[in-house]
Length: 230
Image (cartoon, rainbow, N blue to C red):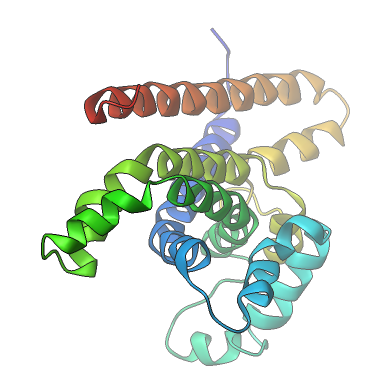
């Protein structure tokens, strides 16, 4: 069994908290935007698609710096938020925000592809029987797209667990406050004798990612069988 230090346990717990909060906070906005991109036809659709995927193209450090300019204590939005007690910069909440933004494109893409794969004739049949658009979405589209939604959530979670560049730029590397697994691994590689600790945390990171992927696969298979599609 790996003999982890208290600081290493703290980094693991913080990473799990940040990844869970980032994923859960992204679910509803991600699903709405995925639905909009999959079903909507409106001016600026290509621009919205580009903005959603922008974090995949930009260097993570650039994303982190933009977050610092926007949500730092003196940032465009950060100054106003700080007045009401909401602070992101150099806090774990800022790490969750950075991870959510970095994982958002992966989540939206998986959800969008799953929604686009839903047979429109099933939705039209439900509408013909008198179901409202909201009821069609909740009873037809959402259940059929659920495997893709789960996949998107797992991708976002895995991305959050491994995010480094945007996080360390926006919230720094403060032990116990913003030091997630990747930041802790980086810190250990910079000190003499830290290789063993870095290896321990690397193994933990790989194990957590594998567990998340396996759980997602099991849930998706069970859901597919329940829907009669697998």
